Amino acid sequence: MQIENEKERQFLDLLDTYKSVIAKVCCIYTSPTADFDDLYQETVINLWNGFDKFRGDAKISTWIYRAAINTCITWIRRNKKHSNNISLEADMPIIAESSSKLADYKRLHSLIAKLQPLEKAIITLWLDEKSYEEIADITGLSQSNVAVKLHRIKEKMSKMSD
Image (cartoon, rainbow, N blue to C red):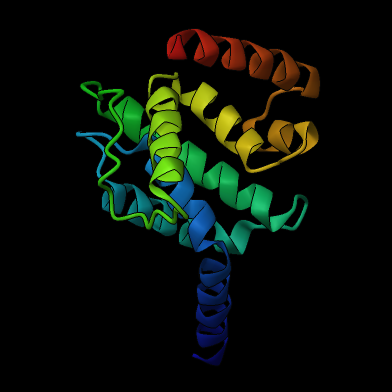
């Protein structure tokens, strides 16, 4: 019983530390068929189920990003009727210093919502200032493939915003 309580405490501490990371990933994949709360809950369940298996080969943040992205992508694949329209009214807290920044935030997320699932993951990680090495570790791509895909994603988003 003591060991289980310690495991739960460690997991809850981990969740507390990385809740904004999990929320950010879930928000990116939120749509009419993928509710933020459902995605967040499923991600937490998957993290809990894999908690004992985490060996520390990668950084904990890498493991969390990978689990969150994989959970969301799996959700999308299971729900073939998935729409690319993001719901910015999700329960994720949006912090904006001004209405202009909030408008920029909504515009950026509107563009990201139009991307394919892997593209969403790559651009989100890049916006979170992850290195190409970290993005490669999280997505399972090579660093050079990350660089190429990121360049193409930026071009695609630029064309969409015209």
